[in-house]
Image 1 (cartoon, rainbow, N blue to C red):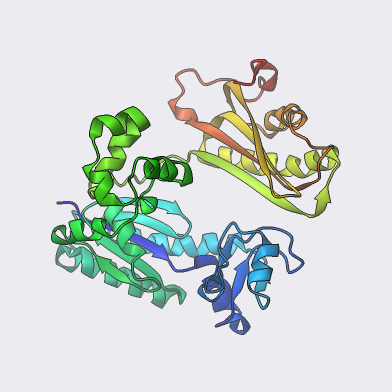
Image 2: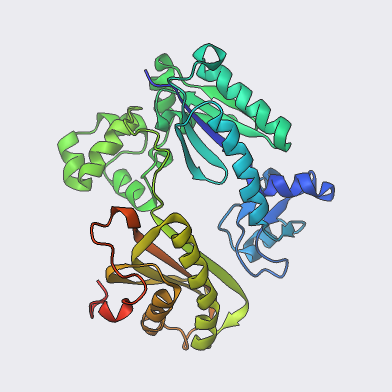
Length: 365
């Protein structure tokens, strides 16, 4: 049986800010967004969550829910540095560490000999070392696979440690609504509900052929996960699926040229991140949020992978023309590259410095 730990820092960004500024201790804090209601909340402290504030919420709504909310500018360099410290702690136990973000990771400690090979003792010691070294708390889940470990880490937040042994799997899954399963978003949840499936017991008992017909292979994966089964391995070198950046304007913007000017440095930033990771992208996506909070995306696919900022920038005007920019005010603009490939995996590495957007197919697919 595998021994998997999922470690999730507690309200990571907000906790860092409360740690570094004693005046924020015990107060509702939002990282990101502005007091005037512009922008989006990137993270919320537990005190803010008590008022219903959460990440990805518009700052204006967060302010209405919690009038005393303290808005703090994100310090991603600080978060990344602390994340690196925490990852070094993980790596002192096992090389099988799969970061999911700056604030969470899976560890496979099946072969670890420290602390008599006890995953529970290892998780407890990791939590203590994180606190001693950073002053921050983490929650950990321990079980036999990634799904159960992640579910367990969320059960007793903050500063929790939860173990799901084999004999408890059925009981844990029986209490779980399907909406808590990875891969079940609002749309899939509604489709399952239309089939009379709202909890994991019902999903685990559902007819496999029917699920396959409705959801393809994902239907069978969901059925397995509803029973607590998950064969995914902890992947230390799991490649990024996409790289992106976005920003919110201080005032709604109607001028398309102003949008392009704000997008230009994002292309530089994304290209730098591609270069650092030795990756190239087959696709680029433009993202807009209008003043009424309606979101829209427009994408193009390159005929060959690209990695240069000027190539990414050259694709943006055409994408912008396919939106209502210039006719509807825009509050947020962003871009993202996807369909990433490792340069080392290309059998014939393309000339990433001379060819680019002029080779895009006319329909952008």
